[in-house]
Amino acid sequence: MPEFRVVDFGRVSALRSQTLWHALAYGVSRGGPPTLSFMRPSRPYVGLGYHRRLEEADIEACREAGLPVFRRMVGGGVVYLDEHQQFFQICLPMSLVPRSREAALRRLLMPAVAAFRAVGVPAEMGDDLEIVVGEAKICGHGAAQIEEAVVVVGNLIERFDHTAAARVLALPDEVRAEVVRLMERFVTATPADSAAFRSAAIAAYGEALGLEPVVAGLSAYERERLLELDGRFRSQAWLRGPQRPDPKCSQIKVRAGVFVLCAEHERSRAVASVVGGRIERARVSDPELNGAGAVMEDRLAGLSLADVGDVLAGFGAPGRRLAAAFAKARLPGGWGVSPRQGRREPPEAV
Amino acid sequence: MSDITEVAGFAVALDRAYDPAGHFWVSRIDSDRARIGLDALGVETSGTIAQLAFLPVGETLKRGEAFGSLEAAKFVGPLTSPLSGTVTATNDAVVADPALVERDPYGAGWLVELTLAAPAELGELISGAEAVPAWFAAEVEDYRLKGVLAE
Image 1 (cartoon, chains in turn blue, purple):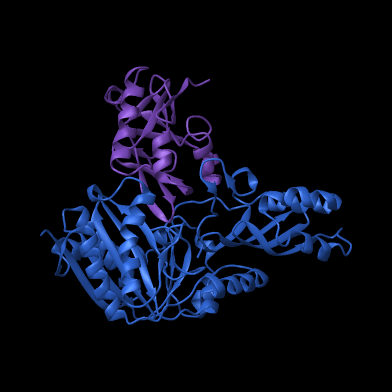
Image 2 (cartoon, each protein chain N blue to C red):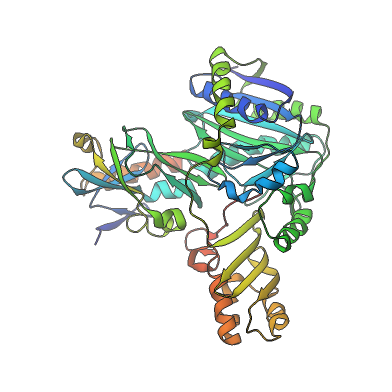
């Protein structure tokens, strides 16, 4: 049976908990074997998705808390990572991975679902390609094509500090409080035995890929790339990342289908928690509301995003301004329904 | 107005050439400039696009090198140029609203424009009112056989 490499790095520095698996991806791209790797950071830090603006992280708060910030090459948003998370990465040559991103993610995350289940966590693959238990996400994942390799990363979250995770986001306090409230409900830890999880993951990926696991380490080429990556990830130029437009509307995603929207238009401001396309809770302000704010918030609660404009139209000029604020959400047609695929997600933030 | 037809359930513009490797379309602007975008199959296999980033105007690249990157479902991948050249324009509208690529892949959802370094590379792309639909239909069938697309 063909083989795949298993590398367990154990506890590593925050920097190496990123650069090691990036180095493996370059190695796989250069002809290295399919590789499953594990590691755990020795201390808390903040990870920034490849496309995200550095300004989305509260750099001052990170500095005060002594948290380094590293930009990764996989997607997603600003994430808080610490020693209570067992990271895993599966990396394959691009030729072995379906061309469809959705199919690729499903194929490479399903063995992780099996591993969770093997250690007693009733995990399922959600419709949104997130690993869930009930309504809560239990595994943060991301993926990238790095040269000629595809890597999918995830974690077993043994403990999760929701407040610390929200503290590193550059948000007004009222928005942060709402993010924490939703995180506590929709992101949960699964304190399983990490050694058992690693063993189960090796078995599950081996079976899914039809490959025999072989324990090994870094190649000489990967060691070279590791040193280069250490330098790159420490550099300010890399951390700053590609030029990105300043979004007109802040949308902080907690998990698929769950986000906090914060938008302004002229003198109006709206903060809304959205769950499954419906507003769960809204806070609105406008100098001309004249006490109608509470009524408007009641009317918005439970409303589909698609209906917000119609309802706010009944509140005169302040309603129109607030409708314009909501319309800045980055959703097709402004209201969250894609003509091709149904509900559209805001950019991943957490 | 583009000459759009339907092939195997997907819209395909017949007035331009296609890069089979990356599922990009290439439309000549003039003798040495071309506009590049994703075709409908490229859009479909990308999924819901969350982020796009492009090289700055003025950057030069060779065919096969990335002119930008695309993120969908937290999956980041390169946008690999079908042609060599210099980036002369990038579409700010799709950076601000990536869904525009899904809504109008052959029109407002274009990605970048290049001044061509090797116009002869255009000859290696697929073009023509007969060749493009035949190639595209075969691609869709292949993707369906491999389970990349739903039946």
